[in-house]
Every structure is written in structure tokens, then in C-alpha cells.
Image (cartoon, rainbow, N blue to C red; front, side, top):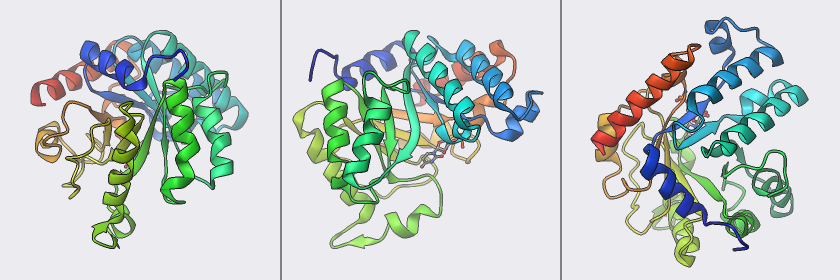
Length: 274
Ligand SMILES: O=c1ccn([C@@H]2O[C@H](COP(=O)(O)O)[C@@H](O)[C@H]2O)c(=O)[nH]1
């Protein structure tokens, strides 16, 4: 590492202070409608500003869904840059949900974009897909560790369609289990740079006993998972669990106080249940 606090230490401190909830910023067109905002870059900007006002400094981790910003081209990216920067400036950790995955040489460019210290999109962590090969992400893990950032690798996603690929056998174990085991091996350096994405929507069937890094668990609320499911699904992995809800919280908008209250209520339920 080069002069940065380790990602895992920053994440532990943030969740100890503000709870484990990760709130998503997912500006779905239908949410722009519901918030009486235009389906345009201006509407996106107002949406993001209201979210930032509600969540910055209040919740530990915020996860902007890059797809909904990308949809507006360069103007959308400009909004995303400001969103990330203001959240991070307020001490809220940002996980960019970009789900990047490519051959290693191209991954290096993606890694610089999301984890490089000088990038306008510089985030605390990024989601990545290992399905071009876990080892194609090696340089991404290395850059994350060097810069005190994190990476969340898709292991067992929250959607039902993921089962066919992720549950397929790779020798003695499932493909998803091989991702878990390879991630645990990288974290053997003690930095916990590599986190997993494991959906909260069902029993994942994974052996997480050797994995001590953070686990991002989407699926609460709109996808049907409940807070009461978390403790059972993630037995043994509760300390470093980041349950995620996006639409479930955003449905409370556009009122900033209602958004903040919705996040605080869910966070308290999570802390109580875990
Ligand atoms: O397995 C996964 C990985 C990522 N996601 C993302 O999380 C949010 C969930 O949004 P909700 O509105 O709470 O359903 C969204 O950005 C997904 O792309 C996921 O759901 N499952």
C-alpha cells in the first residue's frame, strides 16, 4: 500500500459508526417520473442531488448504479462524477456498481477509471465480473490494494437467471464457490481488498467459512428479500455484510427527510436483526 488507509479498515470504521446498510442510487426512469422529474440529464442531476443530500454523511456506504447515469451519455457521467465526489467528500464510502469485466489489459483501464486516485470517477470500490476469468482481474486487485480501495466480485448474484452459470459444476465445486475460494486466497494478504457480491434473495449454497472479506448483498426490498432473512442466509458472515437496497429506499423520495428516514429505519432494522 502507498500512503492510504486500507479499504477494509475504512469500511469497518464507517459501518461501526453508521451501520452496515448500503443504499443504492438507481435513477430508474420510473423513479424520475415518480419524483416528478424529467427523463433527462437535468432530471438525473436533481435526483442525484436529492439522494446526496439525504445520504451523504448519514449512511456508511452508497452504491450508485452506473447504468442509470451512463444512459445519459457524457452529461450522465458528469452527474456521476459530482455524485461520487460529494459523497466521498462527506465521508460516505462509494461503491460504483459498474460490473466491469474484460481481458486483463483492458481491465487495467477500467481499474484506473474506478480505482485510480486521479480519476474523476475515483470511487472507494467497484463491482467486477469474474466471468472472463478470475485471473483477468489480477491487476485490478493489485491497483485496489495499492490505492486502499476495494473490489466486489460477482459470485452468486441476486437474480434467478444467475443460477445456471454460477451454480454450474467446476470439478468438485460450483463456479460461484470457485470465485469465493479464489477471492479468499487473495485476501490471504490480510488486506480484504476483495469482496463478494452474494444476493440476499435466496440461500446461496456457498461455503463462506474461509472468506473474511466484505460481502455486498443486494436484493432487499424490491427484489423480495427481507431483513429477517439476512441473519439466516449469512450465518457466520454478518460482521462484514453490506445489505443493499436501492428502490426500497428510493420509493420514499423525493423528500430528502423521507429518504433519510427510510434509510435510517432500514439501517436500524438491519443492525437489530444482525
Ligand atoms: O446480484 C446483484 C448484483 C447487483 N445488483 C444491483 O443492486 C441494485 C439492487 O437494486 P434494488 O432496487 O434494491 O433491487 C441494482 O443496482 C442492481 O443492479 C443486484 O440487484 N443483484
